[in-house]
Amino acid sequence: MAQLFISYRASDGKDKATALARDLGVVFGDDQVFLDKDDLRAGVRWRDEIAQTLKGRPILLLLLTPQLLAASDDRGGRRIDDPADPIRREVADALASGAHLIPLLCDGVATPPPAADLPAPFNRIGEFTWRPLRAYDWQHDVRRLVDDLHALGIAPAQPAAPAALAAGQLTGGQARRRWLRVAVVTAVAGAFGIGWYALRLAGRPSSTDVSGAWLATLSPGETLSLSLRQAGDQVEFNSRPVPISQRADWADYRNFWRQRFGSELDAVSYRGKGSASALPGDPLVVDIALQIVSNPGDVLVDTGNLHATIAADGATMAGTLWLNGQQVERAVGLARVPAAN
Image (cartoon, rainbow, N blue to C red; front, side, top):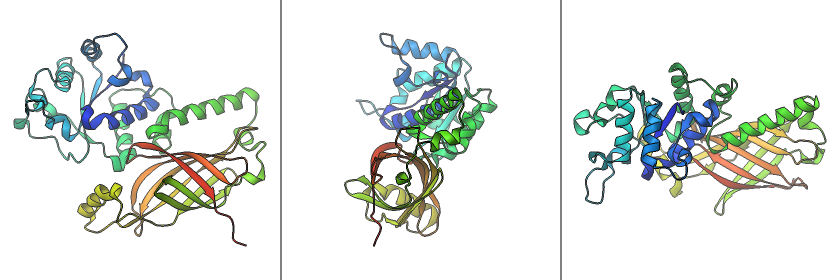
């Protein structure tokens, strides 16, 4: 029976619920995290299945997004005022069974609303210690939540998983795949009695060194000029400043920055460190934990991951870019910039 139950309003909480389930699944095991869209079996009455799960007294992680409480029905009334509202029933069933509730404040919700404004059982939310779950500080907030869950007796599935999450290596959409990739490579190394370092470097041609200037295409209208430097199996990169003052996709964050710091955020830079590895006979794979920082100022704006495979000619790479703030994964292509003669 799952020990963690994620409750959310689908209209504005589905992406965060999915990402949170992935990250907590890496630490505690997928079978310990209940997310309705992933864990409801075919052919069952979904209300009965959820109610049965809640009888096991899992910790209820309530994603307190703006729409969770403010969403309206077809008649214009608040959905939370309807006793049949699924979120209301989940919270009521959890509290009735004695489950522990952790409200997670998302998308600008700064504090739980006053109890007088809420019907039962939502009027009890303020009794419980809440935690922020902010897109722009996702890694920090999830790490703090993991510590809380440990303190409440939820045991990790793998001894190394919490440490990996704390190091920022297992977050967002890439988490499960990266955990599996590390496990598989480690198992292969042990099976053949060869060292991990030797396994990564064996058979790597010198032409696959990624050091130099690269142009990364993130979308048809967005490119980054990057400088990569490789030393052995370690890789780091830095980008030139990226202007964002005229970009619509940065408007909300720039507004947040203006309110928080009283200044304008007009440019950011990308940087990161990671590894370049290859199994014998396979192409080189670059896996980099990245940061987006303000330029100037070097204030952390977002974190994520770049995972790419180099082509046989060493001139291009193809892969994916994950940004925790946006909670999306997108394809990325990199082309080596020829050295000037």
